[in-house]
Length: 448
Image (cartoon, rainbow, N blue to C red):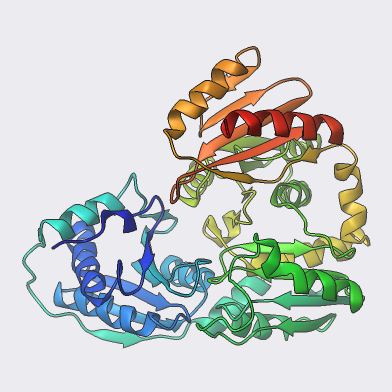
């Protein structure tokens, strides 16, 4: 069938409903999934988007017509879906477009936890099967059963921290009308020390309040303001499907993902001395520095959950973090979760008897990071990265993921977006002045 090849992304299938991704495509993806993986059972969950019931019906119809039985886990967060795939031991499809705007739909697909289908492994195979109608002959018609694992999930994640160690904390959590609100309330209800104020906890695919991506400053502005005005100890924000997590400290300031990775990595090493911790190529020097100082082994990896999960699983790493708010846990099947890091941070603040701003102070005095800066590119992103490599050839040049250049007092990574015509710059230096000077220099080359 004719299908827009652009919906088959690096880590999932994603497109605008109903133009790029509709019921016909969803049905075809269901059939292709069974044909490619040769599975007889598939776990399927969905998010709160207005198109998700229709897309759920379409993809499950395709799965069953192709001969697979569907285990329907209902409307859940993506970490609940990962939990189901891991504990039941089957392949899975989650109907979600994550943090994309309301008009998008999509699928996140598990082969067998922690392996997901990605552009390198599986997603382009599905595209070829769909385009060529190359489905295997179906020998039977599948059935659907419903299962609710939410209470098991609540018990499991609470078992990952010492609930009794939590001291009184005032927490404001903004779930942005995404998928985290209901399960968050059930979990936090088991934490007597935590005083929770919720923002937009009801799932609502019309997104009446703000967008689903807390990396965009406008989507977290109200939370930042309320942490200060209500005197909260901390603010938590979650993306639409609940696999990414963000923190606002007690000053009402957004905390970068690399600083959180550094602090949580260091904390994990108190529980698991000498352990391996995976971080992504964009991260601040704070991450490897703190991990080494705590006696751990830092491992740098390409950006993207398919790569981080595979590396953690291969190496037996206990924890992994990405700048963009994905946090991965060996104790959670090497998968990412939004809920779990919120629990870890509350336990860390309680045991260290410190505010988050106090824990951040030594990092803020030493590491000066640009944050991710995106530039739209008309020409060839590869040529632009080659130009950067030549311009800064007196530094240490690496090509693990995009181009990375390191000098003694500053470094940067520039990599292309997987989904848009953008180059993404992350830069760090040993002083604010040097960071701003080098940031502007690298940007001038990217934008010339």
